[in-house]
Length: 248
Image 1 (cartoon, one colour):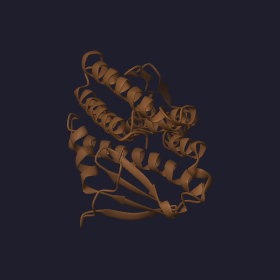
Image 2 (tube, one colour):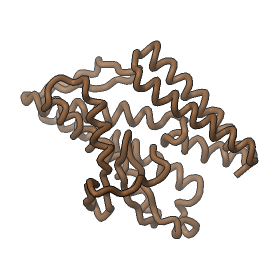
Image 3 (cartoon, one colour):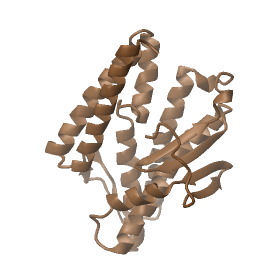
């Protein structure tokens, strides 16, 4: 959800993954901790943080691998609520990934990587002969629950499934700057070069407000309501700036 790399700090964690530089800002750990504060037990909270780290990293790795397939040189930054995968803009105009189709596929690659990880986890559980329960519904989404002999492993797999599936689905909503919002912007700009971006911002505001209302009153999720309320406001500000300046 980032729009730009945050400043570097002396507490950043840096490492390569499949030849792609990864930087984890300390605020990433703090926000993951805050999101898991309602959980019971220090070990459970640590498992939650690990699941968030792996889930978000796999999501961003999906973006990065798609970018590299198009000839870009990507790097990953995990920060705050999520992450950002960037690439060298100097190669943008020379790559097929600079077109609308390339940008859409790059955006889709992130959630797809998370869904793939969830599928592999479920396949491993099923192959090992353990039970998978598909009855749990979170915000209208079926989130599989697993029954494993090791309780901590069961927690880790269940939390990873939640992060990969629920957060991946949320990321596909047509709300900018989520992946779905970027996809909607690319498609609508191609359909209508003069009004597409304005229309994508209007769509983004409507969907964000709807999710905020459902999050607060239907799903009883205050954090989700605050997040999408903020996204609705930021898109409203962007729409006003766009209207004042004219088409980009």
